[in-house]
Amino acid sequence: MVLNILKISLTAKEQYIMKRLLSEQIEKSIGISPPQENYIRNIDSGMTTERAKRQFSRENKKYSIYMRVYKKDPLFGLIYKLSKS
Image (tube, rainbow, N blue to C red):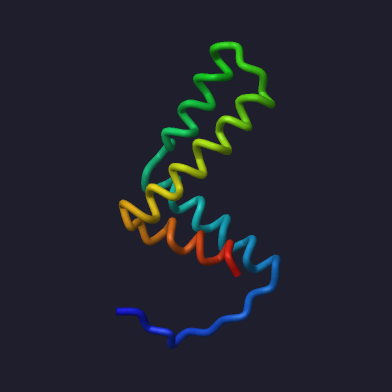
């Protein structure tokens, strides 16, 4: 069931703040994500920072989709909705 009761207009700054808060809550609830672990491992194994960041970005996008679509994690769903608007 979807309720479309709450309509809120957020400024860009408010959206940024909300996304940061949700991101911090995700970190508290799951700890270090697999893409973050791989980023650290890649840097430790000698990969350049730029290449490790690109790899992290790809992996993190896939992980976010997995958590939102397949695991139905509400925090990832909220971040997605904020980034769409």
